[in-house]
Length: 185
Image (cartoon, rainbow, N blue to C red; front, top):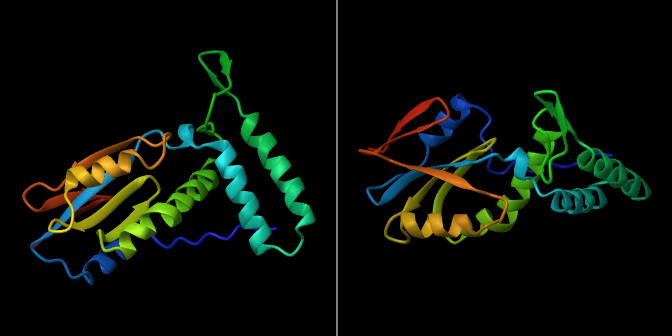
């Protein structure tokens, strides 16, 4: 059994992102904006991940009878995760414990589900000219003649109740993303 990761919008590293960025046609109306997802792992909606994983397993695997077993096992793992802090043991009300070895896969699955259902539409409609993500850091380029920063931020604040974003707007045509200093010229 395996899960298919589409990774349409992920950037692998700074070097590959820089190579991709120089090929983008950016004009004077484009603006740069970064978003950081706050406490992503702690806010992953477990039931949504289980539903998405089940649909992915059913769509991409021949042995559908094993899907139920895998989802049951994943449910147990996600719902029975605990952590210790200052001698006390806690079970989070939602999300995936930071120390969990499965947190990265669950966070990636959740974000890809959002990208397919929400961001793809914005790119196809040319509201966003460019979108990329590295883990929980997002950079996008938008055309200021078609939309504005406040409209985008208001929209992004409504995409999911578990997602909280902090934004950074470009300053003097510059913005930081990953370990790059990007200048819009």
